[in-house]
Length: 254
Ligand code: PEP
Image 1 (cartoon, rainbow, N blue to C red):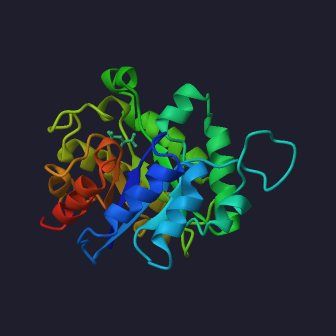
Image 2: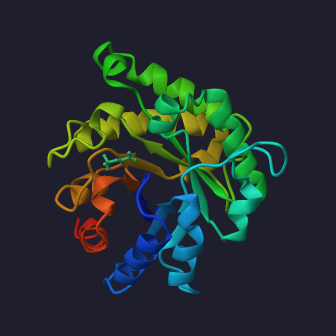
């Protein structure tokens, strides 16, 4: 399976900084045998897109979407609007949106389905918080989030979903050794794969499962060389374009 690395800028970089980031990143030597994408704030999509031009790397993605294509939904952005920027993928259900914006499993499911109908790949984020982790509820929580999000989706074709397992207790720790080791992540990824295969049959084998949580240039190879880990979602370590370029190169030295 071809690996994929997605940068999640979160709420960083307006149009000017996004354009500058892309211009620096495009000078980086990048591996050809992995996919690379950047999840960009909506207001910076145009600037990023124009700095990338016709180049196919990196893929342009978004961090959020609404589930209707038009209407009285003040402040929201529709899948059709994202499509105008040739957005290839969009994150849904990131833990920060679930926590700060009150996104429910049901809302995540509607967003994922609307994206797929518009021809955009949803990247569905799932993961347990520290309390759930300590109580031994991780498998149960992730299963609930995942089954709800993929309920109305098809598992194959160009808009097949990607899944990002992001244990909330391992996000942005600033530590080189993430508290969720590659081995811990692998166990959860195996569980996710089992659920996907039950839901989608053969197509469930090909859905890429990314790990996210304090991935950096020093540890990325350890994650990506571990079985069942098909890619990484990278927050903090994607904010510097040269460091992110190094991370992408380090990913393939495994
Ligand atoms: C994220 O929040 O999506 C993430 C992976 O963040 P970080 O890499 O900073 O842990």
